[in-house]
Image 1 (spheres, rainbow, N blue to C red):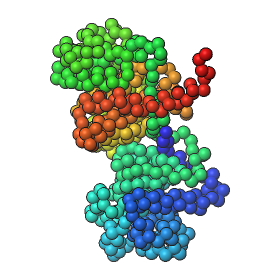
Image 2: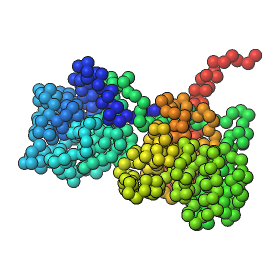
Image 3: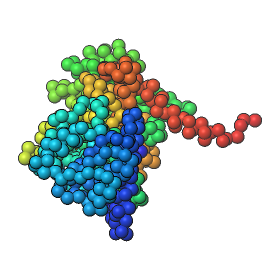
Image 4: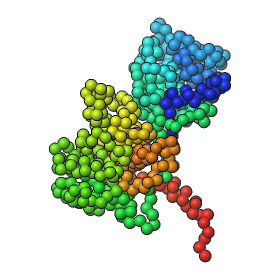
Length: 536
């Protein structure tokens, strides 16, 4: 599992070592890790170290010191190094080490702006070490002008130059991922001690590129992370597996209230997502004409036009493909939410939600839907997230605010899908492909999460959620669903050589994805069982 921390948490973890006089040791460790990452990147691209041009954009603080020490090490390996001092000054010891190694330092002035921008554009490697985790706001003045000049002529993806961010791209908020001013997108971010939450939430993730964490010895002082990302090992342990004597009811029954005469396909896709994700049975409630389409597409689904109370299920999925005019379906959705059972509330159900919900209700909005929900909850005067753009500019803050206001678990769909529990735990999953942005994809995702909720036992997720209250397990299940959906989408696209996919293709790919993800847990179970006594 990847754990991510706020800038405040990281600085607090450094304090005991700084108080012990180990500040320079920390900086040297960070610089050494940064320099090694540059060397590994060059070698992976088949390029020489000796003779390659490197420009380090160095601020006047410790982040600039990390970059200068790294550049000094690389200069000693034969790289042609130039430091652009963006703040008019620099970390004295680091700058002295850089010059001793043969590096050339240039102060960024108005007159030097254009020639230094041109030199940065010509470099084979650029290290962005202007602002660190403690910076407030984005780049200003000549530093902003320099980055803007570099961005104007930046080579397309696949060019010879690559950009490495030192700890985080300058202008990206370490806590939230918000981006201020011009930001130089990194191909690689080398971050120290632990990942920063802002690197795993949009729009910060847009600028971070690949993220590499360098251990510098502060890790034992970290508190509970503010954000986590499930990796393969955790996904395999979270996946439910039927017991030997399982039957369709013990494997979970999901009730689905979705679709409408206008959007009947949403019901079909939600059912397909649920069936693909291992649930024992799906019961569908909706208009007769939609139920007929569901029967034709998914003969396994039990369809009716009855009430929520008439159907025994372990969880509900409500809202996909429903509009404000679908009064009967909305009444069913409200009844499902009031049942006390776990619920996935998607799309059309979101405007009809009561003010206060429980953590076992998982909301799955996209940015526009989340903006509308927050605007309704906060009121016109206080709505910070007034539209889709405002949510997309601060996704982590938006999803946490929604979880706090509603009391529900909130999943915000996006390139980095964020899940926030009302108790404060949060997850970020970025397992998919841009081809997932297709009509019906969210309906499949809702079906997958609904199936997981229906299969969830009381212990699901607790072993992974140290430091998060029991309500956080619903966030873990939602993150698991997002990961399965993303990996399946990537697999579906890979099967057509990276080409476009339809939502039905995502559902088709989920069973194989499930099998591949579960291999690790199956392997571990086999190892445990292999130590038992043979039959006699």
